[in-house]
Length: 328
Ligand SMILES: [Mn+2]
Image (cartoon, rainbow, N blue to C red; front, side, top):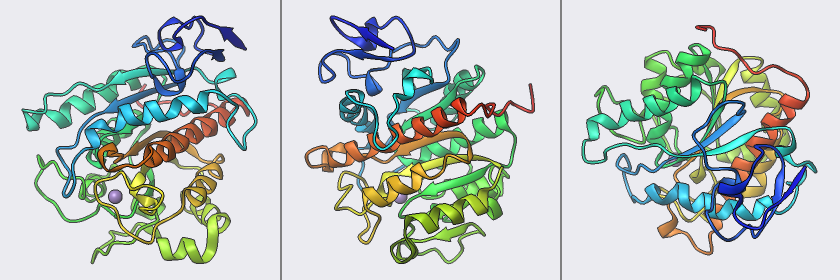
């Protein structure tokens, strides 16, 4: 299915399906040239951005992540993604919903604003693919996803950091404590959750399975996929990908880089192997383009997001029904 547009697919495309022939690098740079719309009827996946960086502990700048990843993603709209060999949009209706609005000058309102943004999308049957923003955004997203899909969810967490440092302050904006709160609040089940690429210490990893960066380097992507599938099984899972899971050589444009991380090839190989899992929502966070070079980090993030769409396309084509809300 190919539309021949003389202009800008982000605003001119008629169908939510298929790809279009256009100058991918020009005009309104939606994610992979999908239509910018807030109309959710018939949508399988709504991509949106959350341009927040007020919860960072070190270098800020992830508020520019969504626009940088969108700009880097357009080249991926030129060809069928490798190694999949299909156009995910032939079978999967994907829109760019735009960005979550919140008032950064009233910090206490940010978490509720993100929860409401997510609820609005999840009230339809669209899945969310979210671009951060700093990693704090995953916490309100987990609250909304647990409401929709049932708590606790399993967490598939790519990161240099475990983000389970203790924090009992309910209103804190901290991008290192979300999963401490999520476990304490029963949003995620640590015993069926897994953290991949970790290389920062915490005295208490709170019972989550750890495939830390040295383990990945020793055992490789195939073994990691097998372990993740074993740990998560058939449970509903939320996947969060902090771009600093990658080594700073592959993702310099991020707020808290740590040496010794995964290559983009390793991380993509792992993500591509997760098509057996029931991923109910996903995000790619912590791209901070001011520290990037030649868009390296944004390109890596766009590839991760594209591969997540391909996983969902696989499940849709194989006929596995999308998980329905137990609360419906
Ligand atoms: Mn991190």
